[in-house]
Length: 214
Picture: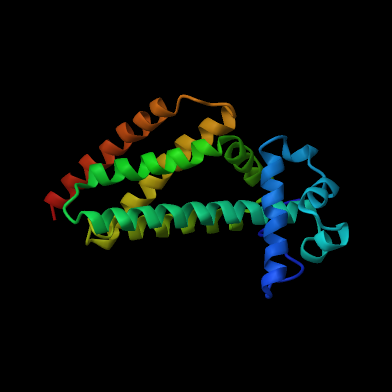
């Protein structure tokens, strides 16, 4: 069944409740690093998390809801981590060239995904199994908004910046997700990074031409 987003039964308003929900997510991710999502049972999740089955059902109606929230949290955390790194990069240097700036961010993002490549491989697959177009669009928009913001110091023209951000994310997301979907145990990360950078260089060249004609 396709689901638009995580159908959370109970909003974790209190700190203890939030910790419990996060523990269930972290436990699922921990198990996901060791086995496929299909073989992970709700009972296994609760046993490792140290809570009862009833506690699980206070927050989620079914395992798919936990999966949906896990995907959302991973995409969101990836965006937050990348934004933090980019902001620190800008603060250190206000004269950095766009190509060098993007090279650093791409390397940073690939390094983070490489460290959890098995988990990301399964999450990319699960996203296609349980997410509705609306949920997928929300995650895509989150990343487009992120890149749009990260590119602001280099591009003042909003239309050009939004188009560049869209194509940039298309390349990065496409290369990484399709690689891990086809090869869960992929390990040629340096080559993948170079392929992404080569493709992005074409975008930068096109951008420079567009700016020169304004």
